[in-house]
Structure formats: structure tokens, C-alpha cells
Image 1 (tube, one colour):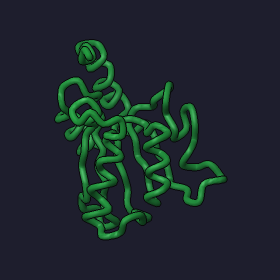
Image 2 (image 1 turned 135 degrees about the horizontal axis):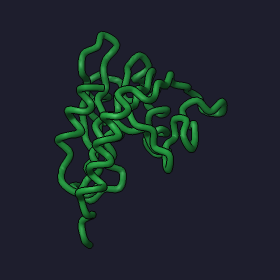
Image 3 (image 1 turned 120 degrees about the horizontal axis):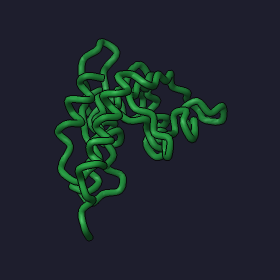
Image 4 (image 1 turned 45 degrees about the vertical axis):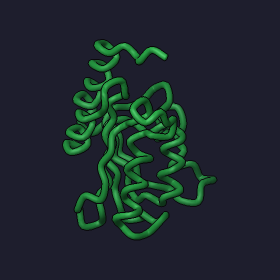
Length: 147
């Protein structure tokens, strides 16, 4: 999670500071990404989605990250949780809970729903206060980009 926090701090201005890192079964880093929705003008450019795209290339399997782990500073939303299920990620470790859009136990539990084809292990609240502080500071000090 410390690495994900490090990555989150490099998030482009105006993007919500979320960092995601995917680790191979041997613990080596496969991918690291931040949110880039505003920077890339792409509603799917969440840190988790960008990290999955990098990880499958590095790992050499387009949709089986079964023994891999993602560490992300914020509980994944439904889009990201669905993508993690589709990528067959083995473990999801996240920092701050997301009480409005969280899909790993807060609002929804997409990754452990009995109807999905793959269930991931989930551990939330890791370095929670440090991860939550990133969000609080961002929304306290940043105005969203005017359109």
C-alpha cells in the first residue's frame, strides 16, 4: 500500500489522487497507475483500469491475473471491480473505504457476489487514514476543472 500511496501522489492536477499497483505472484511490480480521467479526457481512465492494462501486457496473459494482487488507495468502484473480476485478479487490497461508490463491500460487493465467475480475496482499510487523507486534502484544496 505504501507504493500505491507513492503513486497516488503523482496523480495529475485535477484528477482524484488514487494510486494502484499490481504485483506478480513473486511480489514483483507488474504495473502502477494513477487516475487520469481529467488528464486523458477518458471516463474509464481510473487507476485500476490503467494498471490492469499494463499488468496483462507485462504478465503475458490478457485476462488471468489469478495469483496477482492489486493494492489501491481507494475502494474500487463498480467499473473497476468488474474489470478486476474480468481480469481474474487474485487479491484486492485497498486503503480508504468509498461510502458513495465502493464496490468491494461498502455500497456493492461486486467482487464477492456469488453470481460472478471469479471471486477475489478482499482486504480493505489498509493504511486507511493515510489513504483517506489524500482524498480529504484533494477535495478541500482543489476545485474541479471548469468546462
